Amino acid sequence: MKTLIFFSTKHGAAEKFARLISDALPGSEVRNAADGAAISFEDYDALIIGSSLYAGRMQKRFRKLISSNLHAILKKPVYLFVVGGEKDKYLTAARENLPPELMEHAACVEYAGHIYDLKQMNFFERLIMRMVAKVRESEFALREEAALRIAAAVKEHHE
Image (tube, rainbow, N blue to C red):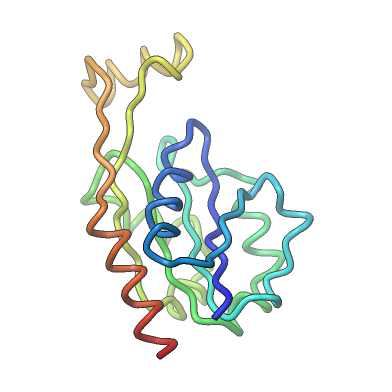
């Protein structure tokens, strides 16, 4: 079973979560949306797709790659994850950022947790985090159990 874990990230949280899934799915391939032009979704048996959120939005290049490849993506089993600070809003954010057909097709949508690494953020990002999210120090809160649930779902589907 050839599995692609496709992600979009700004500061690395979505990539770290993608790697947690990959660790539980030996042989899976992890690719960044920044490499999108070179990705052929048709080459895989299953797709795990995820992005981090910034002000409730997934990165534009990620959304564009999903939309432009939606036909090929919908032919495969799909598992989604969302990285962001607000657990109670991840599903709403996924629905607002991803095509409705993809949301209906997905076998699962998991909340991946978040990372607020203030050292990686610029002055304005840190200011916004302090004012809006009330974050005063870095937080590292990825949900390993969510990564394991996605990996287990993929394995179960393909056994």
